[in-house]
Length: 219
Image (tube, rainbow, N blue to C red):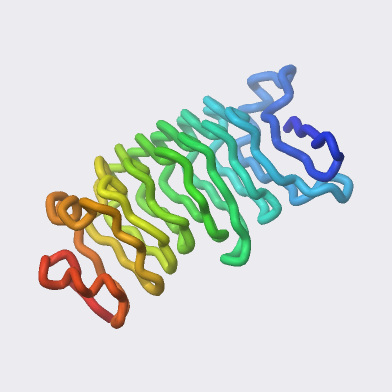
């Protein structure tokens, strides 16, 4: 794996694979596990398109030192099945747009830090069945477009929903366990149109939507 030291020599970025790596060697690197640090210097970023079209990848595991993933960093990785990004809710991480675009084999995603998402990060991940990201700073338009296998999703803390947050996906049930998201204009009508139902905790402001049939369970 190729790394790049920042100008101030304070952190490393993951650039991709060394250009002289033979295809037969890549075929043996099915699991990618990025280290927390190199010689005591933390690894903090995944550069744009670092592993785009890396069809040899089946599993990716990132440490909690990684705070940013660049544009299309893992796009079109056709064999990628599992992605795990370690962390906790006290850490803020960010994705640029289309990070996992067209990763057709991707099934499981775990992101444990508080995520600021990009645009259409999981677009066309048609076999995605588990998206575990408890803390997210909102769901942008078409974020899961083409994720037809993703039927249920839940959040501990989600900041906002847009009218097209779940458009083009297979999502039918959404649960909010703690903080209620802000609802932008048109969200309720879209939820009704797409037959998406919500469960939430008692006292959650979303319970105002019970009369519209959107809220189906209050715990």
